[in-house]
Amino acid sequence: MSTEKKVVILAGAAALYYMYKHHQSAASTDAEGQYYLSKNGRVYYRDAEHRAHWVTPPSAGIQVPSNEAADYKQFQGYDNQSAGRDLVGIDGVGSDPE
Image 1 (spheres, rainbow, N blue to C red):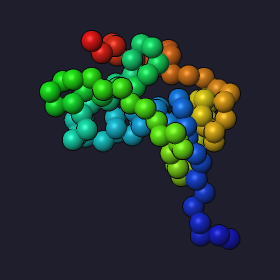
Image 2 (tube, rainbow, N blue to C red):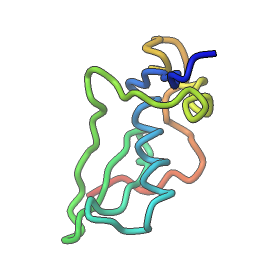
Image 3 (cartoon, rainbow, N blue to C red):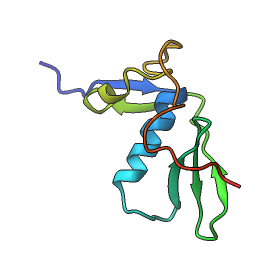
């Protein structure tokens, strides 16, 4: 049996949702600010001065342990696949930044 951890690449919507959920599980407001889902299916955060900044996933994707990545299998960008859902209509969606 291998001791290597299996990873999955999350890109696009899957990466954005992973980043959003990861920051939601961290302290409510950290150095990077509070993260939100917008009505248009994008992720943004508000910094300490309450300014909105859109979050863009890295073009190469994010390497995530396969056991964590399983929660994002239904989203576009899971293991670099183009099929899947986007983030529009995810419950918990906040208002769009001004």
